Amino acid sequence: MRKNLVALAMFTLGGNATGATATSPQMVEPLLPQITAWRRDLHMHPELGNEEVRTAKLVAAQLKKFGLEVRTGIAHTGVIGILKGGKPGPKLAIRADMDALPVTEEVDLPFASKAKGTYQGKQVGVMHACGHDAHTAMTLGVAEAMSKIRADLPGDVMFIFQPAEEGSPAGEVGGAPLMVKEGVFRDFTPDAVFGMHVVSALNVGFASIRAGGAMASSDTFEITVHGRQSHGATPWKGIDPIVTAAQIVMGAQTIISRQLDINKDPAVVTFGVFNGGSRFNIVPDKAELQGTVRTFDPTMREQALASLRTMAEHIAAANGATIDAKIPTGGSNPVNFNDPGLTARVRTSLEKAIGADKVSEAPRWTASEDFPQLALSVPAPSVYFFVGATPAGQDAATAASNHSPKFFLDEGALAVGSETMLQAALDYLGYKS
Image 1 (cartoon, rainbow, N blue to C red):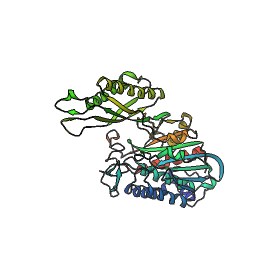
Image 2: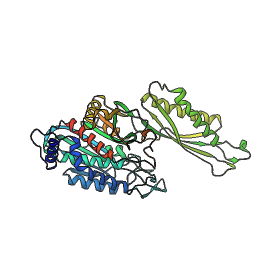
Image 3: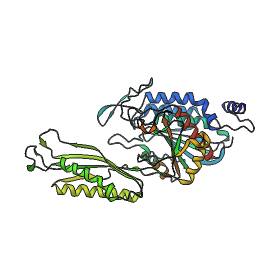
Image 4: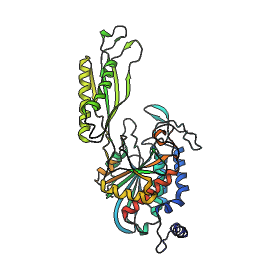
């Protein structure tokens, strides 16, 4: 115990005692009050994609305070900070997302969000319902911890604070693709890219990681069915786009169950929007569908998208209707693929930080991320892992999910996420205290 306290004291003073080893928990512990304060401040003041002005200002100010080289305004509100180590070594990029969601918070917290915003032309509540406030705060903590040992740090680290991971406002572009387009790696080519995400599916104190496809690719689609308007009492005088659209929705369910080999990989086709009509007794002239396709295999992805288009066209034709379809609409995310060799190294680091019994293999998750756009642009191997957010003793399987208005982050996750990411970064760079 005394040895640990001496190591912690020497780290806090900015030095290393001969033979002392500062572990990531020791390095993070004195920073936790500030990490928690950042997280609570960001949680109270969430901002939607491409609108993270206040968040970006806070991030840039802190990075400058740590002595990093800072660049702002990339992809609208994105911020990058570069920490140059005092010794030669590899280049590492660590990414955190900053944007919130158009969700009205239903969690009773003293720092709960009361923010409002405009989304798709409507006034909405705004909430960090996916934990990006925690990602930003933890990554700031990692940056501060590493800045304190820069003289002994091998290599350089780029901290990427990304806007609009959840998507850009209608008619705008943003997120990782725009950061790449605007030269996030113009003067810094990373040898690896790290990311992490808090999840309600794990209890606090635990982390998980998976080699290979950890998160699915995602594509969105839009289908407009054109019929012919008529009185609801005489539907035979028209062409019903609602019935046609309903048949498309139901028929598309057989793409997964009857056309794709799901022994190979899972896949999902989901319709999230069905709009049509304005009055109970009028057959409208059109109906609109929107949805998403999630896959882990490129061949299955192409097959699913092609089958959806074919099915929509043929069902419409069979009903005398026509369609306008964007399948996909664009802005697709690739599979979030963890390089197997690098994943094995990072898992060892996670186990070192929090204990081998607290690290598990993550199940494949059909959610998606634009994180892989960064690594693919270099290209460089990447790793993305998960940190538990649900309080101990609560069944994580039934906890309110990410994106829910009831999503709750146990702040113990702030220590776990900061410690694991810091340890992974230090080990990758080859830092020896």
